[in-house]
Length: 138
Image 1 (spheres, rainbow, N blue to C red):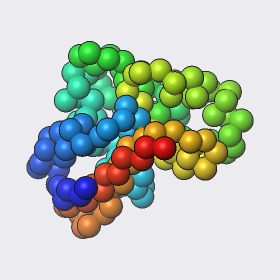
Image 2: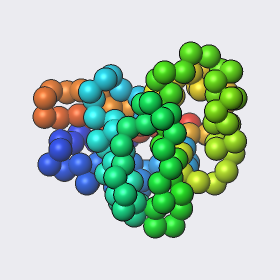
Image 3: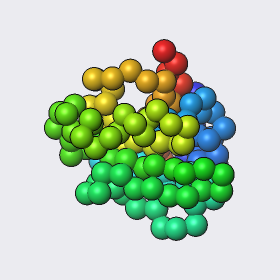
Image 4: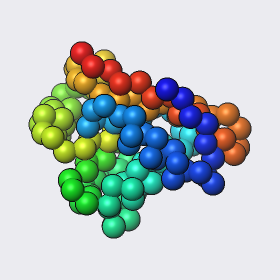
């Protein structure tokens, strides 16, 4: 499932992800600057988060209270090996029913198997991005 969007219709893009996702694990892939965090901020807003959503690049895990659920936003870019996945308790987060949003999930995907919704953001030009959404059910 694909959708082309710009900042002007990012609300539509966030609703597309929420509606089409079949899991409570949203894994985001895309180059630096593709707009992963920008889209995640809008998704969180749509789900009732009132606080400021920011990139968890240094904190690794941010927690937000949505309208009906807790949302965990993670950035695994700085993790070097799967021991850090264990040490940070990321597997425990993935085993609960809350919404988990992960940027840079590659280290997790190469070492563990979960059901997840892959949200790949591709750069088209300075104004437009393409979301390719795949539900991976194992």
